[in-house]
Length: 339
Image (cartoon, rainbow, N blue to C red; front, side, top):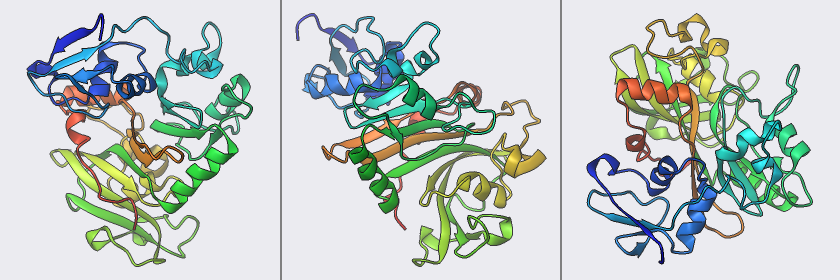
C-alpha cells in the first residue's frame, strides 16, 4: 500500500476488536467503510489481510490508508444518512453500522421512537420515509426496539430484502444479545426464563407465570416467550450486569422477564415500578437496556455479519465509573438462538 499508516499496538489497545479500535481513532468513520477497506485488503495486521472482528494483540502492526475527513454516509450517497444543517436526519449519519443495497443497520439512540404514536412526530420510520434512502423503495423496519432502548436496529431496503430478513427473524436463524443493568442478583449465573404458552396477553404478565428452564431448553410449543441470560458482573447484591438473548420476540419481553424475577432493569419504571430506580447515584435513572449485537448471515451474499452498537452515553459513563470493560463481555456467546 502506498502512503500507508503503520501503527504499533501497545498494551492499552490490546484485546480490542479492529473495527471498534478504528472507530475510536477516527471520529465519524462508519462500520460500512471499515468493512469495505478490509474486503479490499487495505487494512492489514502484520502484513496479512485483516477482518473487522480481528482482536488486536500487543506488539502487532496495523497498516491502513490515510483516513480523510469524509462525511459519514457519503459513500452510500443517502440523503437520510448524510443530511446536514437543520435537517434532523443528519444526526443519524454517524450511527450507521452497516449499509449496502439490501439492508441498513443503525445504532438507535435512546429516546428516539422507532415508529409513530400519540405525540410522536419524530421517529425513525418517518425519517427514513421522508428523507429516503437512494433507490425506488423506502426502507422497511423488520424488527422493533422500545423508545428508550438503544442499540442495533435493522431495516430492509426492498420488499425482497424485507421478506428475507423477516424469515430469518421468524426462523430464529439470527442471534440478538442485549446488555442490561438490573437491580439485585439473579438466581443463577446462567439460565433461561420462560413464560408458558396460553398465558394472558403476550404470556408474560407477572412473576407467577415465569419459570426457570433447565439447560435453556423447553419442549416445543410449551412456552410463548423464552429468554436466555448470563450474568456478566455483579455489584454486591445491589446490581448486576446481564447479557440477554431473547429467543422469542414478545413485546417488552426482556423488561417483563427481568421484573418478573424481582430484578428489574434500572430505569424501567413501567414494569419495575419504584424498585427500578437507582438511589445510589451510581447509575442515572434512565433505562439501562442496550441491543449490543446482532449476528446473522447476509440473506443474499451469505456473508457473516456481526453488527455491534457502541454503548450510549449513560451506560458508557456507568461502565467507566465501575471499571467494567465492554470488550471483555463481547466474548460471551450462546451456541444457538434456537429453542
